[in-house]
Image 1: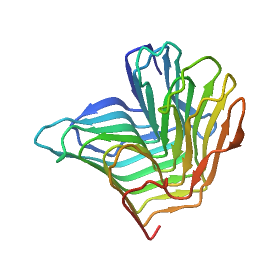
Image 2: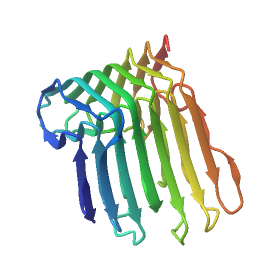
Image 3: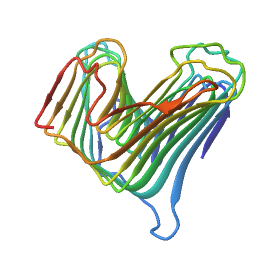
Image 4: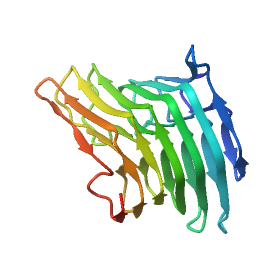
Length: 277
């Protein structure tokens, strides 16, 4: 478990954070009778929080660019959970990233590359809950990739899982378009070039909700079978991927009660290609 008031949180089933490190053959196998859990909690001002079933945060920081790989990982019979409450808005953009394998990757150079090969997420719940002013991004394999370079996910399988993002608002938080509740079968969000190839999400529930009992402020709420939100103008390519996930998104305020956005493969602003998926 990781718990903090403020600052940045890194939590993972094996590593909280790694830097320019190749990884091969990491497994987190829980009990079949009692669900083992990886928990992360932030109170008041978690500027950013990362949680992964295997690794919370992967950083590739090199001005000349380098390639790192995360190979042959698996999580099974587990719960990966992150919760965050932000009421004081000390940070203008508190955000939460959680994934079945990795919470988020970070490339600091355009030439940098992070590649995830042969990842399996089996019979696992990946769950994020935010209270008040929070941005939430949940992915069955990876919650987010950001800033620069390229992220590749190849041969990843999410089977028999639940992928959930829930955002609750009950007090006067100023209307902010950066309030998000997004969940996706493979990758929750990207701000960098991303390639998702030969991945499948099978017999899995993907759920994103927003429940504001105070007013009618707006939020981005979306659930997607493979890829979620694209921030900015990065290119996202999805090749030979499959999802039969059950997708549900709900949006509720004091004046509205309706479905949120649901996408079978990815959101509508892909700016890339979808082939054989």
